Amino acid sequence: MENLPNRLSLKELAIDDRPREKMLQKGAGALSNAELLAILIGSGNNKETAVELSQRILTDNRNKLAELSTKDLPHLMTYRGIGEAKAITIAAAMEIGRRRSMEKALERPSVSTSEEAYNILKTYMEDLDHEEVWVLYLNQANKVISSKKISSGGVALAIMDVKLIMKEACNLLASSIILSHNHPSGAITPSEHDKKSTQRIKEACNIFEISMLDHIIVGKGSYFSFNDNGLLLLEEKQTKKK
Image 1 (cartoon, one colour):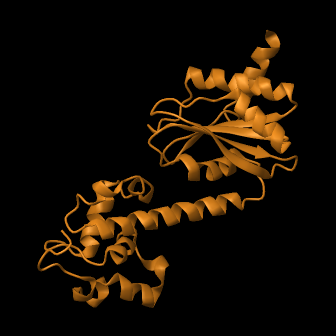
Image 2: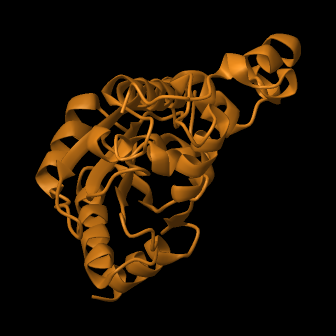
Image 3: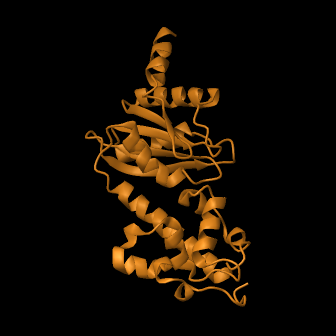
């Protein structure tokens, strides 16, 4: 696939259609995602320019880079004109973007809203095809001490291990935690299992005098906050009644 005849390269395009020249003149911010991807792959195939091929790849991924980042090398290589070398280049660029997001998240000084917590947690879980459980451990000033993956499961379930969560909290001398897990389906409505697991962990936190600030369910570009929806308070009231 790498040696198709009559392939149009970026050099063969009209000046206005050359993303490299456009980037030199106007900066990277002026380029579309397809144009940036075209720079990575360099050339298209005998029927599509690099930009056209890039547009088709993005269209197949709902024009979302996050969705493209989940595709493995064999999938990328199903596109005519994308061989092993280009597939690796695309995958490497996606990974660099993910790591940059993680570094930016870790630099966040404190967490005071569910959105801020979500912006940290989505870098770990938003693009996964399986469930994972993560916990943000915070100090008295609500600054993140540590972000830790507790478990990794299948498509529908990852275990929220109370012992592991509390062990880490005690080791870090955390004042509070934010529990989180993802729903690979994209649906963010909590299940009954999610609610019961949240209650167990909140009760364990109370024993150790650690505040459970929230439980964030990470979806595809959206999230659900137990705290924002009054579920943490509801569970607390139910516990007192018992």
